[in-house]
Image: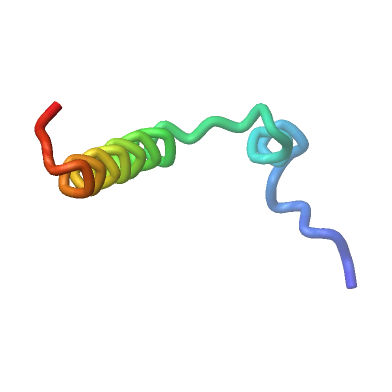
Length: 52
C-alpha cells in the first residue's frame, strides 16, 4: 500500500518529535496539576490537623 501523501513534509514535521507544543494540552495539564496540588494540600492539612 502507498504512503499517505495528503500532508506535506512541513505539516508532518509540525506534529513529530518533542518540539511539538499544544497550548490546549499545556493549559489542561496546568489546571490538572493545580487541582492535584490543592487536593494534596487539603489531605496534608487534614492529616496534620492544622491550618497552614
